[in-house]
Image (cartoon, rainbow, N blue to C red; front, side, top):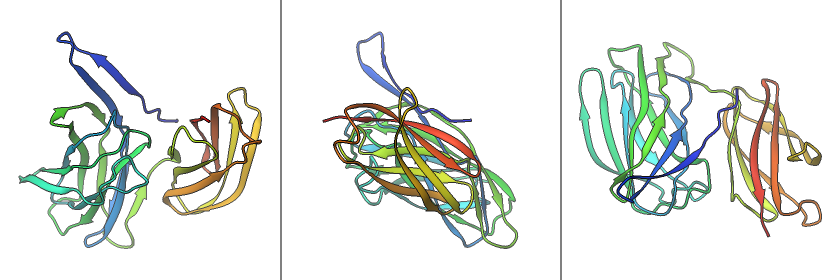
Length: 247
């Protein structure tokens, strides 16, 4: 099932603007002690501003090694600075801040670097507790990622095949598509009109397990202004993503 991300705009009774956004984490993460895995956090930001994010994890399974942004994400600072942390027996809360945040034009906001630890738990959770934009709390909804310790072998990220966004969006002739697949394979990307007519096909794209990026290039004569559907075809099924062209 395709998970849709919606950015909602609400007006409170006092006239102040508040924003709500869904955040998407992988459903399950398998990690061994000493291993570091990068986890993308998908969602959208409503505008420019300083972001403060609070993350909740089970300290007996993982620790937060870092929180990072990237120029290809909405967040343009490379590394978040730690603000505060609290570690208890069953949970750890850590807050990080970033003073340079781009607008919500990309579905991946930032990434977490998690390190497996030699703790007392074999199972735990990861979730985003809160996000503040310019000290104003956003209304968020975040799914819970289940953390499982792998006794041996490489940690394995279990995540459904999905398109997490394209940047920029809208675009003119070039846009970078972000997508994830459960295992290494060859995929195809098709771009169709809203009525289903094929505009351009990108076949035989090698993809690694986890997060991938692919740059889509179009000639002006191939694609006009308007909305289009991106079709990601993999061995695990087909998923879809909406994008816009503007000139």
